[in-house]
Length: 112
Image (cartoon, rainbow, N blue to C red; front, top):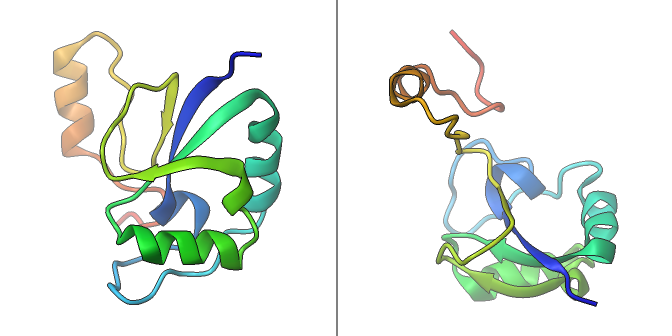
């Protein structure tokens, strides 16, 4: 059975990220393991991160979710959907997208 590919970001999606710390990856976000397990039934999962891949593999293993991921990369590969906390969905309108860029905040940052 062919499965569509989903690319899932590590920091801010699967963990409780609030700032980058090179030698530390925050704890797994509540519900992330169940979410990944459900997705794996119908999709091929690729972890997307700019972190060191060895560090990411260790984090996946520690949280017992490494078995659900086909690959880890820092390169945007062809995928059906990208799940990322720092993304905008382009709606076809450049003016609206320009405004959204100026007003963008990641969900985990408090709005002033």
